[in-house]
Structures are given as structure tokens and as C-alpha cells.
Image 1 (cartoon, rainbow, N blue to C red):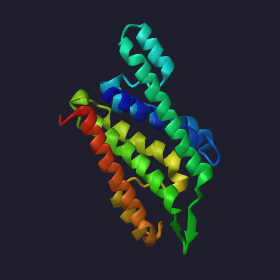
Image 2 (image 1 turned 90 degrees about the vertical axis):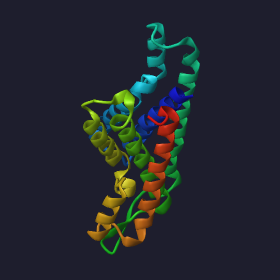
Image 3 (image 1 turned 60 degrees about the vertical axis):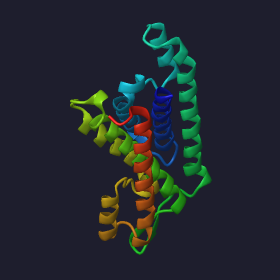
Length: 213
């Protein structure tokens, strides 16, 4: 189950980033950069657990190569497809089902509550998930890429949901942007709730996958 959860998470964020950056209003010509970035960081984060396929065709190829157990092929693909479908619903909620534009109020941004909560929660989860896996896990101990992985997670998130919530992913940054007048003080709670919830869920997912290492 641990490997399948990793495949679900990685595929989810790959497809979510694709949808958020390709569908208008997206990231324009920078969409491929954001997509490559999120794939890179999810490979860094999950490679030591599942091999980080995030693609049924890759799973098939790795299985034919003899590097994936036959018993894992169908669960891997099912996890990948479930991640894709889940991400698609999240994208549809942000792009069509909810108002995804941040409104200006007195010179400061006041994001729509539900879209901002979802956007900030998802990429704070992604950021914490990547940090825990590349900077604290035994399976990636001593690596030299953790800074790159963490930074590019924020980059992908900024491209994917920056237009929805501002792409904050950090309570300290949230406090700073409110103090600077970029975001209205009345919206601070949105960021704090989403960030701490995302970080806590990432910790729970990490402990499930990696134990207490």
C-alpha cells in the first residue's frame, strides 16, 4: 500500500499541475516548465519508495524490464489512474466549479475562500511531502538535490495556483504578505488553516510510507 500511495500522490500532482497550467488562465508558454518541475520533484520525493513511475506506460516498461513485481503492476496502474482522476476533479473545481480569481480589496488581494483553501492546502502538502522525503528520509540520506527539489516544488506551485491564491505555501510568508499589504488581513486565516492542514497531512502520509525513520 505504501508504494501505491506514493504513485497516487505523484500522479495527482503531475496531472493537477498540467491542468492548472494548461487550461486558461494558465501559465502560457511556461506550462511545460512547471510540468517538468513538478515531475522532477515528485520523482525525487517518491523514487526511493515506489520507483516514481507516475505513468502506466512506464510501469509496463519497468515490469517488462524485470524491475517491477508482477503483483504490483495492476495496483500501480490503478493508483496512477486514481491520482489522475482525483487531480482532474480538483482542477475542474478550481477552473470551473469555483470562482478562481483573486479579487482586489483596498489595494490588497482577497482570494476567494474555497479556491484559495484548496490551492494552498494542496501545494503546501506537496511542499512538505517533498521536504520530508528528500531532506529527512533514510532512503534519500546524503543526497545533493534536496534544495533543488524543494525550490522547484514552490516554482511549480506558483505557476499552477499562483493566480488562485497567490502561491504562498508558508504561514510566515502569509504573515509577511499581509503586513506588506499584498494580501488583506481578513484572508490570513485562509492561509494559516490551509498551510497547517497541508503540513500535518503530509507528515501523516510520510509516516505511513516511511515509518519513523
